[in-house]
Image 1: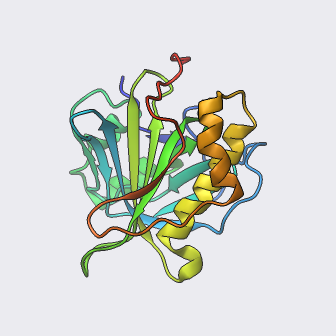
Image 2 (image 1 turned 180 degrees about the vertical axis):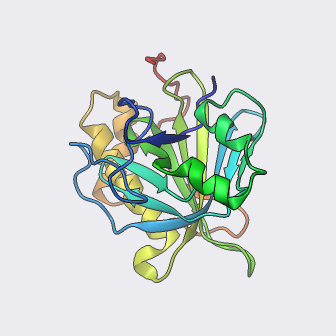
Image 3 (image 1 turned 90 degrees about the vertical axis):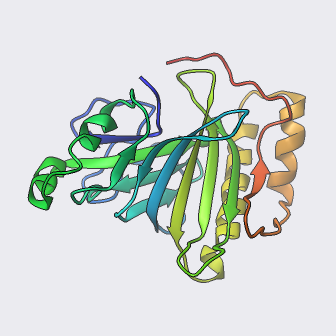
Length: 239
């Protein structure tokens, strides 16, 4: 069963470190002890999950026609959406994507049935900084496009890599995609430095904490902060 970062869960689901636990209010999740401070909640209107491969990314999942809450803490980036499906908004590429596959198979039903199906459920996912390899941003290059954030992580269930791209709804300098990428990189570096890491990892992370340099936006590519040294290999699967 492929890990795709996102899953449809409810508050009765058993705790699972791979996914957040839905909160008591819409578009929210339970807080973890390590979360610390949070940025103000943001919105994303499309989520894309890809397998990151040497020959280029392979798309696994797209969720659109929705507004997901994006919560950024000192420990992780979280997405949560109570109204994740409005009669057609989840697209699965290939098989074996776990709990989302059941929801995706019912995309063609009426909005009434969709509302019944998601009652008490929430689309959730998170990228803990322990698994984060890079965070990047791309400004809109056209009238109909939005700012994008991309989080690259290693799959904690296997020795491979995943990417989560968020099409964001942003306004003002304090919510710019470049600011968010820089803040995430700084918090992630701080979190990683508190763990047992190699000298090569420390050399990459320390500058991001002390004085991260703003990245130059690129029109058709992501500008990214790397959080791992060249030749990084994920740790052996633990789940």
